[in-house]
Image (cartoon, rainbow, N blue to C red; front, side):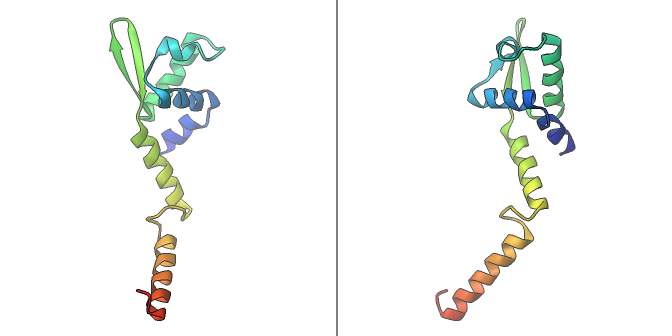
Length: 109
């Protein structure tokens, strides 16, 4: 999960992910959205790939990137659970159990 958050820490990489949410894109197409060199963009792509957030496919001389949403969702869910914000967290379960107990006591169950 640390690699995912390291990747998300950079605004350029977050923008790359936003662009890839729309559809897969080539490295050149992605690079056109940023005022940095192609080697710098390649380094950003490498960090995103290392984190598992994007996958690449080579087609001739073109590299096409696509978003791997499941990795991002898993990291965000893990982060939320750390703070008790996710549905599977102990706090949420406890609150849900308390509400169910109140409904039972009122005869609403």
